Structure formats: C-alpha cells, structure tokens
Length: 128
Length: 128
Length: 128
Image (cartoon, rainbow over all chains, first blue to last red; front, side, top):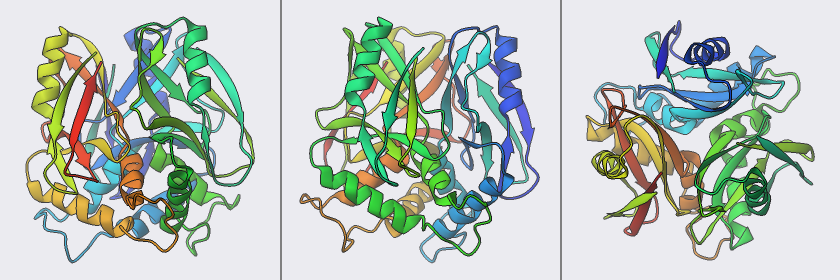
C-alpha cells in the first residue's frame, strides 16, 4: 500500500486526483488487476465523474448542498460539520479501478476526484 | 477483463444485468474471489437492489428525481444533464461481487442493475 | 468467505461492525491485501464514517430521512419500505477495506457501520 497527499483549498471542492492515482499504481508496480483507492477520513469522499467540463463538479457540489443543508434544526454533532459527514457517505470513501498494462482503465470522460466537504484541509489517499 | 454491452430504452431506467455479469464471470474462468463491475460512463451508475418487485426500481427512480431535480437555477453545465451526473455519483460506477464455485454470491432478493440516468444510450460494462 | 450476524434494534440504526470485520479478517487468515465487506440484503447498507461522537450517526439518519421520506404519493411498492431500498442504494451494499499485517487499515476517526433502514432485523455480513 502506498499513499499520496492532497491539499484542498475551499470548504467544498472536487480535487482531480487521476494523475496521482496513476503515478501510485506505477510506483506499486501493478500491471494487471484492480486497485482500491481509499480515503482515511470522515468528511471527504471519492467519486469518478466528468473530467472535461468543470461546470459538472460545480453543479454537483451545489446540488449536494441543496440536498444536504449545512444547517438543520435536528443536527446535534457539536463540531457543526454533520453535512460533510453525510455527503462523504453519499459519495463513499473507497472505490475500485481496473488496471491494464500498468494503466488505470477509465472511460474517456472519467476522472477520479477527492470530494472535499470540510476544507480546506490536508488529506491523504491510500492506494492498494 | 471482459465487457458486455447494454442498451437502455428510456431516460431513467434500472436495467437488470445480473445474468450478463454471471456469464462474464464464467467466461473469465473465475471460480473463487471477488470481481469488480465497472461502468466507464459519467451519467449512469451501478447498484444492487431488489430483483423481485419492479415497483422498487420505479420508486427509486422517482425518488432520485425528487431529490435531484432535472432543472435547477444554479446548474451551469451546458449539456443540460447535470442531474444525471449527480445521480451517477450517488449510485457509484463500480461495485464488488463475491464469487464462490464460479457463481456470483447475491442475497435471495438481490439483483445487479445498471442505473441509466441519461438514456436511451448504448452502455458498456467492464468485469475484472 | 466467512460471515457474521448482526441484530438491529430499531427501524433506522447505524450498527458499528468494525470489531466483527476485524475478527473475521483474522479468522480468514488474511495478512495483506483488500477485503470486500458485503451485505446480502436490499434494505440495509454499509458505510464508513465517524466512530467517536454518536451524534454523527444520529444526524446522518435524520438527514437521510429528510431526503428520502418514508411516504411519498408516488411510491407503489406494496411492502411500504421503498425509502429503505433507496437509502440502502445511497449507502451501497459493498465496501473495500485495506488490510496490513493482519489489521484492517482505517483512519483514526473511522468505523465500519451496517446501516439498518428497515429494522429491527437479523442481518448477515459477508467478508471475502
């Protein structure tokens, strides 16, 4: 297992980590199989989505906030970031990517994103 | 890694792909372990849910649309399918299934679905 | 593949299964790699989230219910638990955990939860 670090810059941000995942797969020496990408955090997640138009990530973040309001009268968690925990579980903290000939196999329009919901923060990404 | 193709017939549709996944696992010659099922697309996803009453899939699609409206004043993505991108990430584009004695292990009521959110389209499913 | 059983106690509940997953990884004799955790059910899911403050799980369950109402005029599924099916797919029924030196690798604040949405019920968790 190897890891790399990511610094998010705003509270809610999709950070494209496709290149770092590819570099880590190379460093691990994996040529065929499946790798697990995992974030050891509870207020950020991982997703694979559009890598071409940055408006997609912006629209996704706004809609996630519309679905999961930052404030709710019933939130009890004292740190005040319950919305970030919920969004993290909606995206998930692990995903699998297929590797062929040493390259991660993604669709033409796909990129791998760390989904920051409680930034800016230093985050770590594990690849196995 | 092998793949199969799926043709969705409407904009929003859960397509049962359980039999094709099983056939592909057989073609790959896997008898024990875990397979990754992956869609290389950004406006459809994968889920495992009820395989008995088709009303479940219909209710799920309607509720997803209630949560993620097709139109929002803040959507900027020019293709007009931001809702499909969001629903795809909510379901996820990869899932893992356990294989025992050459058969995919599912619960009695479970089936594997391709979740089309921007059809009708020709989609590809990868199995590794 | 091995399994363990979980008894949920209320309709909606996050049950911490981290210790059972660790015990099952030990029983399987896995020292390095990735394990798949899978629930063979359609009205409960799995997630990894905060293991410290129980208010986080309570807030997540309340917000999931705010997003996915128990009753909707359009629900057709005769069993009346469509909301549970939808929440199960939002969380997902499988997840992957990295294992190092025989121990599951989680972040400091992470725990593994079975997400019950249609309890109380006896549930089974598969680990491969």
